[in-house]
Each structure stands twice: as C-alpha cells, then as structure tokens.
Length: 312
Image (cartoon, rainbow, N blue to C red; front, side, top):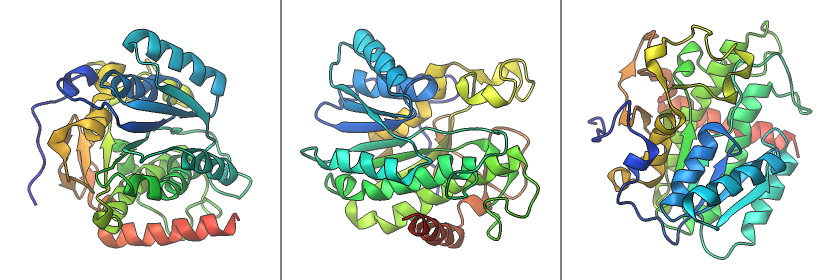
C-alpha cells in the first residue's frame, strides 16, 4: 500500500489546504475548540463554508472563540455546546443534543486533549489522559455513528502525536493501577490509542462510507503544553515549532480536502502520510508499527467498549 502524498507540507497553513474547497451545506464538530489548534480548525472549516459546532468543557471560552470565528470569517453558523470527555454522562448528553439536528454530521475532528499531566483519575478510575484523549472520543464518535453514517461520505479526524512512540497500549494496566505513574508514558499510550481507533473505525464502518484518519499536528505553543514548561522547554528545537495555522493544517486537510476522499485508517504528519517504523525515531516523523496493527486496533475497540459499559 503506497503512502498518500499531497502538495502540502510542514509550512502549509489551514487557508492554503482549504483553498478552493467549498464546505457549504456541510456540518462539522470540533472538540476542544475554545483555543489553540481546535479554534483554528473550527475557524478554517467555517471559513470554507461549514456549519461548525465547538464542543468544549468551558462554554464561556467557547462562546468567545465562536464570536472571534464569526468576526474573522463572517460566518454565523458557529455554535457552542458543552462536552466533558471524562464524563460519560456529558458525552451522552452531547450525542443526544446532536440527535435533534436535521440531517447528517459530515465532519468530526477529535482535537481535545491533555498532555503529560500530573497523576489523576476520573470518577470511574480511568487514568486522566487515556480517558480524555481516547475513551471520551471513542464514546463520542461511536455515539455519533448514526449521524456520520447518514452522510455516506463522512470523515473523522483523530489528533494524535509523535508522542505515541513513547508507549504502546499496556493491556494489563492501561490505568496505571500497578505501574508507577509516568505522565509521558500515559500520554504516549493515549496517543497510540487515537491511531488504533482510526484503523479499527475505518475497518468497521467502511460500508457506511465513514473514513477515520489520525495525525500529528506538529509542535505548536498552545495551552496543551501547560504541564510541560511550554515555550523554552527544549522538548523540540525552535526551527520545528509551527504556528497555530500551520499546526492545524493537517487536521483540516484530513477533514476537508478532496485529496483524501475514501482514504482512511492512516497516520499523517505535515499533511502527508508517515512511514511505519520499528524503533523510536527521535523526530516528529514516523508511526510505530504497533499503532497501526489491526489486531491491536480490534483489541482496543473491545477494551474500550468494556470499560465504558462498566461506567453505565
């Protein structure tokens, strides 16, 4: 299977990848869209003509972001809805809210996330990063399956990270019940889960015309880095730091570009599909073989359903 390549790359911006793309009449949901990459992703989709819902924990911040999007794009079909990915009841309420829509959901961008946070667990005992970055989005996307399937050509984007190379899924201890907690291993595991979800969802939902791809947006200074010293931390060389507009470009490309029609179950970096690797690369490139393994993907799907079933 040959790698998908596009005319875009590291420095491409959201406006460049949507040039000539018309999303009029299409509906999109972007999680974590009150700031940073999520807000820019929502802005770019709205600018291309989409009706966009910002799914956010902080509604007041989401409302401010929506006003900024309307002011910059002239688009008024920008909505805000509450979503707490760590709370199954909140996810259920959000999917019930969308069930009242007329017509399908065309685009879902699972952008919200936390990175390398201090040890913390949800009320159901789930490790905070695995719950936020994977389980909540798993529940959201499966809960929106009917609306996505109604389109017949829907797209889902799972925002992952090169950090997935730090850890596969540790099947016997996903919630660090026995291992000493390590924020970076927890982050890596959750980002691996994002990619595996893209692989399995594309397989399961092929007959519905739903494609799911994962991506690494790059290194961008946003609120995501609040637990890692952020700017000046030295985690990534300065010349590899992107602007928000560049960082969101890969997500927007996967969500909107005709270049990705019928493409699913893959992992993209800098607007192009990344090579599969068998060792940590030490760069922002490459997807670990374990993160695209179909057996792992099926196993994670079953585990996720089991964990969520216990919460109800």
